[in-house]
Image (cartoon, rainbow over all chains, first blue to last red; front, side, top):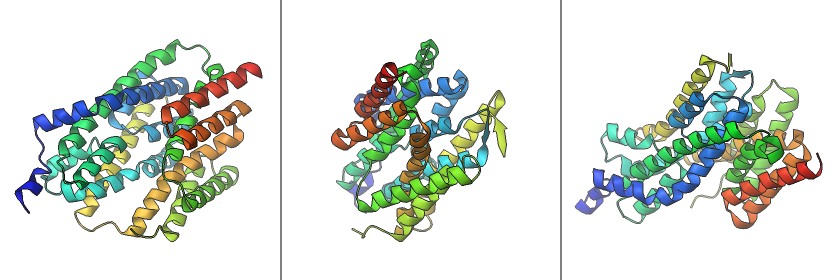
Length: 236
Length: 104
């Protein structure tokens, strides 16, 4: 491996800081999403500390919104854990795609960097790595930006959430649903994906009507996943 | 196993969610250091991560009031046309609010 290649994965204070700064503009949006989550959690009845703790330690928006959707007086841990796993399973693919560069780092740094992996910093650094440019600072520093703004936004949302009297009349009960839908539609769409969505929808509705409460998410996710494994995209 | 969401229950739930999410963040790299993840498994994982969102949304669309349905419709259409999540979500909320104001 040449010197140029080994520089690609270098991680130091200056390139982490550069990565942090680079993602600040994008993180304005992260604040707003965090705010929406704080608001949704407050309406769902979570106390402020649990909400902040969730954003700090889970740091995965879609799964946090999904947890609010499943929240009640009681919550069954297994369906919740599987739902969170299914939504966040894309992290597995992010780790796998970054492995060719991460493998040069010692394990402590490798897994340290992966603590803050999320969609935006993954996509941007993978693009840079593939062009042969160093991006480890962007991956880690950018991840720290997204994480800190996510927590900050959540905190703001809790305060706003407590101030709003009638959230339903303002449509705020729909924050979760609209957020999840936007994430879904923002992804790739073709006939195969559409078929997968249909199978997932039908399976989840059937489970919703005929199986125990909250199993519909797991059933829908598995049904869609299995179709995806049978009907594969042609390899590039 | 069910757990109450009051008191320490919420904290337990946060810990479980955090551990599961951490497993997804570390799992891909960890597995790759032994064997490359096969194409079929990749396809399963990516199909599953979209399907889970569909599975969450389907009952919401079915059981919600018309305000909720129109909100989802507005968000979906906006995403299809301009692919701007923030705008799409805002329009969804505004749609629900306006509908509920007009037809309480």
